Amino acid sequence: MITCHHARRTALTEVEDRFGHARPDALTIPEDHVDKLLLTPIEAATALGIGRSKVDELLQTGQLQSVHIGACRDVPPEALTAFLDRVRAAS
Image (cartoon, rainbow, N blue to C red; front, side):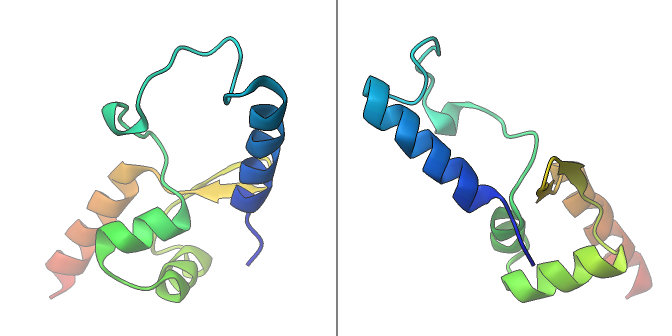
């Protein structure tokens, strides 16, 4: 599965190299103080306690909902909750 997160990191690194930080016009807010609206598939796997390949399978079969922004496929945190609710109901 192709994801764009590596491309994001590369572009960010180029900006950091040029300006010395991520965005010259951005306020500096520590990432752990910001509630993420979207999770990468790796972050979703970590949150669920499963492997990345299983998350890929759940995304491909539609069992775990995601959104596409450009070439990126990310998972809203609510999709994790909805998935867990469905798994619990099926058990």
